[in-house]
Length: 187
Length: 187
Ligand SMILES: [Zn+2]
Ligand SMILES: [Zn+2]
Image 1 (tube, rainbow over the protein chains, first blue to last red):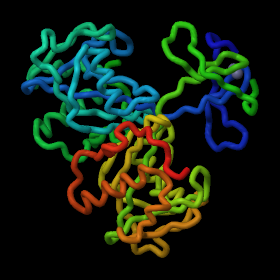
Image 2: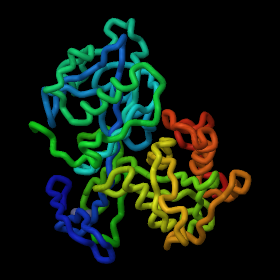
Image 3: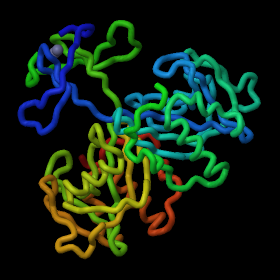
Image 4: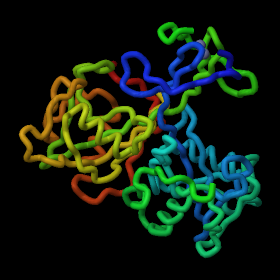
């Protein structure tokens, strides 16, 4: 196979007990593992930082700064990098606010509560190449109907519950979607 | 390439900015992501459950029930599965005790505090195929010099700090190894 033409099919390789993604041409088994998303609820004077996505999926919808963790970094470094890339923002991380599992798509999401490291900077944040717009929203201003993913809704509620107070054990998935298997509403 | 003969080399694919593991024969790019380990500090009447490893790496050394999360499960389901496989134990999870990054090997470890679901069962636990032995240890009995991995030491200290009390924000890496890059002592 060539890099461009790779075609993979789900088959059970010899000696295994479950289906794996296997190259049709050469039999290479692409072991799939859950992927880690790292993100931050960035709070500045009671308002929260949201980014309007410039890329698919969910272009035009609002999300917190978050993305796939890279090899060789820590969860904290990944969260800081994503905020830099998507919102041109330097953060100070408070700690882990929530850990979600999205079993439907094989994701674990580690969400931090954070603050702007230089809120007085001009500008303190700006749209990176993956964002159309970056803004602070008070609780009543949050565009609930235009959030990109269910977990953005979940983590904003988790922040609402804890506020500026001490972080407890991380929130998990809400009772209505314990495994993260509900399809994306409206997508 | 055949499944058995796959040979991968680190090269920078066209249009990318970093090295990726690439098949020497057909150019397939195996994107590498951090892997998630899920595990539990299982506490029974002040004692902690440890498993002596029957497999490499670190065969013969002690660890908590933990292992790689599989696609399609939640972090909680993964931690329960590992305790079933390694210690034949059914658990009740309290919550997340610690989240560690081991940047050296691209791991994120999500560690729960847990209890035996049926402590009165005979037996309540037993060595699974990947364990030579499973035992409960009081704090003073823990075989510190024979622990399999640094993070086993870290998570036992994290449990010691919180005890049976309410879980706070998860512990992270200790100051001496903030990024998880220290080589394994004695291995
Ligand atoms: Zn191939
Ligand atoms: Zn190949």
